[in-house]
Length: 232
Image (tube, rainbow, N blue to C red; front, side):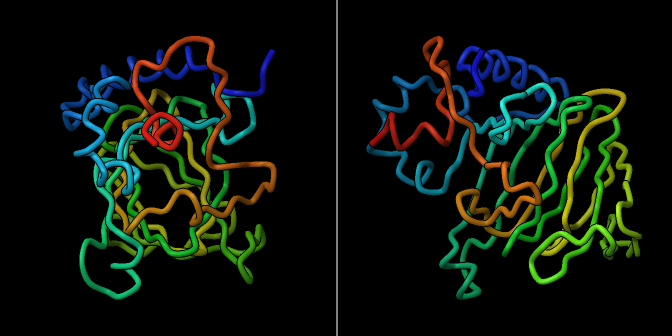
């Protein structure tokens, strides 16, 4: 038994993700299909993909139970923090994600990032929300969010239910967890510049953004977290 995410689980999840996204009419960019050998061969031309953290990402948040706590993501575009701080340039990011039925993304917020979380299809996406006090989740405090442009004043622990086509805008200090109900959900994220290495704050200190991986088989695709090892 291991507390790391098995590479075989990652490979299987990626195959399933490609089919699931395609079933919702979503076409991934060409580099989504590149093998590790493809990326190594094209190392000289993919510096921006590497530096921006574009590509596949799967996490069990360091808790060792991907079926219960986890998320699959593909970052399609991402700007630079330096541009965000100076207020000009590529200030945005976009992700495609799959939230499995009953699979929780644990409570967290962001230091800088504002994001729209959008249900693009499938089941119901449930978003549980709390407010913030001095940089910590306050489970006695509610928050105010925008749902498709309409302001919602929410009590602590409110659970928004987003049906396909619906969305919520989350700002720094909006502590949120989410999961799918009734069926898996194809989730889109449109945001300001994304920095997964430093911009995530989790309520549970045991949670980490990236997973350890046990290499029980060869990778079919590289994850963003593989780039430093495979493409250095």
